[in-house]
Length: 380
View (cartoon, helix red, strand yellow):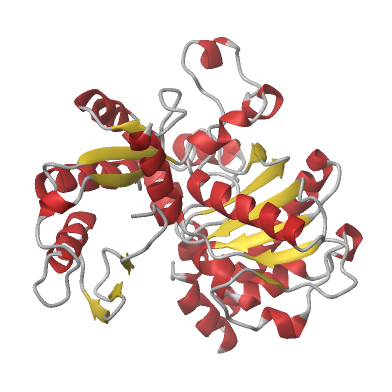
């Protein structure tokens, strides 16, 4: 079977809420439910049960599954490629919990559950950080004492690599296929509960908004993004916060949640439309931060062929795209308002005919990217 032939797909979002959304799709079935899913383990167990369900499933036994691909957010300096998971690999993923506390623990839990359910399958890890190993030292090194890089590996690692890799390759192919330009200078904008942007030159990541951990850069669902470091010292030394409390605040209580009381952009947009001033301001701040990075990355790239919106918010929020692209004609970015409102699962241009820079919406498919990387690893 080709690596890109999909026989079943699905998704769970809003994990941890009473209104988690569960979707399960095959050639003959589409199941959608809203139900409480407390954690990732419960979600994965539900998925596995449906895969083997007598009426709705696509396999009869777990032994039919030869490999399970796992997205792992932080690979640190240990992993620059896709790897077969061993106890040593799991130990290193565990050692990086503090750098990706919202993700690596859940990623490892998914691996452990999959090992139980699909015991005869190869478990394979695909790291978000791998695509960004091409970021040059001038961009990935922090202006702190040298030994912290050489001895402690403190540097920019970058995240959402599978998504940025997938959409950038599709963008380059689309631009060349349609004789628009060579697509050598692209900014990919991944907007979901976690958000990031990548400057991509000749198909390679050369700068990225997330750094040592997935906290900085853009405003996210619950994460603050960029913040003056002195604020942290002020919270601890003057306001009496513990370091643990500050970490929790910046990781889980800030971003759009801290600004509005909501972490899901769909709720924020709905309340903004109803006149909620906090939600309106938060959306404006979100777009403003993205615009700043478009400007800086255009300078780094020394030009711009296209910007690419992707992931849940990037693909579905015409409002955010409108805010980001407003008053950007200096960079050759001109949005077509009517095209921006069109919904499609295909690659689409939403720029005006005279826009120097192409504005693309490309649905990401990290699952296909992970599957292809797993397939290539095991094939070789």
